[in-house]
Amino acid sequence: MSDKRQEILAKLNASSTTTRARASVESRGSYEIIRPRITLKDKAAIYTDRPGMMNNAAIERAEKALEELSVEFFSWMDEEVIKLQRAFEDFSKNGVTNDSLTKLFKIVHEIRGCASTFGFPFATSVANGLAQIIVHCDQKVPPIQLISSHVSAIRAIVREDARGSTDATAKALSDQLHLITLNYLAQLPPISTDNIKPLAEVRAS
Amino acid sequence: MMYSVDCSRLRFLIVDDNIHMRRIIRALLHGFGVREAHEAEDGAAGLEAFTSYSPDIVITDWAMPIFDGVELTRMIRQADAIANPFVPIIMVSGYAERRKVLEARDAGVNEFLVKPISAKALYQRIVSVVLTPRPYIRTKTFFGPDRRRNINPNYNDEERRNEGIGTGAQIIERPNIIDKGQSR
Image 1: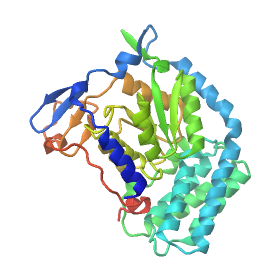
Image 2: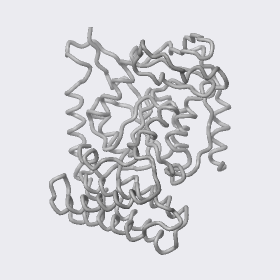
Image 3: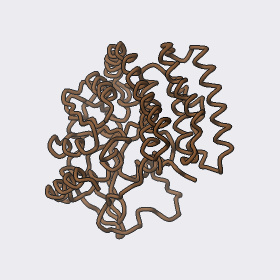
Image 4: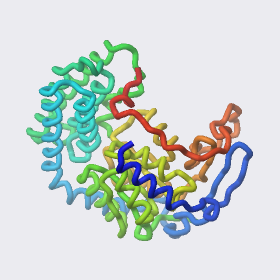
């Protein structure tokens, strides 16, 4: 455990308080059901004559705020791609180590998480396939060429500013890599298939 | 009688190592009417901010340096060791795999939101933790929101919660992200 972690945990334990004073505790023998005395419903729930609990005006305001922010998305995505390229160069030039593979996975995971929000769903799709490859490959001999193809595809999608889900070239590239990835994963020893996210699901999200 | 949520009365903590995702979440929260949102760039800073800032709701990423989002959740859920172990935790993650969602739930996460994030999906999670809070369950190995969302009157099998009362949730040292991903 790092010094930083130990320091924080020590501070945490020093600030000990008791749960029971702030909650009703119902003992059921082998377990307890605990209900906080003060809830967020007390603090933030308001009566309304609107049907349903969703405040559409609030959602629309948030969507508008996101739209205003979207002018930044291309440069943000570009930053992520630069990080990806650096991680891949480190991984391919300095040899495969657990550290270099972990760093590569970290940025690929970031991209699969943020690319769709930034307007690049095909980059999410390719990054998702690449994440599956990194997780499931034999990490002593990872498929460098296949990984390289995915990295290049993500770079190309962003370089060509292929936003949205209608760009035919980005779609073809993404579909092709998806098939190759499925074939690659299928030839590995059996794995839990719940990790493999269907392409349609990636697109839909 | 119908309820809605006045987000301006809530204080948020956003924990994410990606500055752009923090900005996006902050923008969405401001759109909902939130006035107070604090940011932290990793799990350790998030935990410190949690103890000093006392947020009403924590929104956290999973993959972060020092402490990841699941470790952060486990620490917050140490029932007798922190300011408010009942704070609702919404995890926003690129992980979509079922076992990852279950792992987050078993650490004590209230709501799990798979990226890409949308205004509607985030708002739904906030409404859920405010208006339909679940009770907390404490067993020997778990402390967190009731993992059952619905009561099944016909359920007649063993229950996880009969694990016995003990010392509450434990911090578990976990392998790195690549090792964790290996399932074969």
